[in-house]
Image 1 (tube, rainbow, N blue to C red):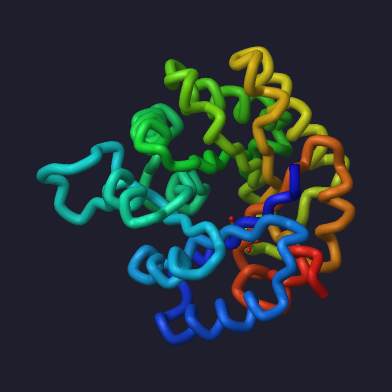
Image 2 (cartoon, rainbow, N blue to C red):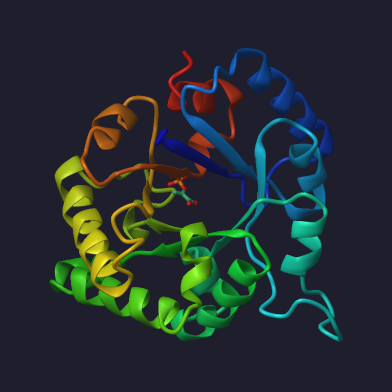
Length: 242
Ligand code: PEP
């Protein structure tokens, strides 16, 4: 399977900037690695209309109804959307999302046919206290318990150490591989037919100068990238195209 690079643009780029980026990116993109993009939800149609797979950065646990301000995973799928990022640490931090609460969003999004990128990761304090693996185990169990087995082939996990997101500090390849291999062992025990093939992405200050050594690790199947996905030139480099 090809390595997968996912750009999380967070709340950046207006419509003109999105369109210019897509033009510049697509001019040089070879498809050597898969490239998916989650722009601001308001501009997601621009990505849907390109040849890249489009995502949103959150969605409702409901498909429709009286939920003012929410984004429906069903509607997003119907308009050609492909994936949703759930459980990003910024949403856990600023919007009080919890793994238990995310369980319902993951279920609905998978049942509606979206691919879910479920983010897990520890803070620096938790790492220093030696809690990394137990915390990630809990995040996986709480988010993934009782999910419909038939939908799990559309599940992707992103390991994003909170201390590495937007900080310029990257987990070393060995640190990342240790956690990815742990995640793989949990997935394999929980879902014997899917665990080995579930994609596990690394996220946290991935840049053109550290991407290759991260991707060389056995259980790192790609990257979830914030800052370095905002410039077409850098994202191309992460996709192996420059
Ligand atoms: C992210 O927001 O998911 C992320 C990994 O950000 P950055 O690449 O900027 O650390």
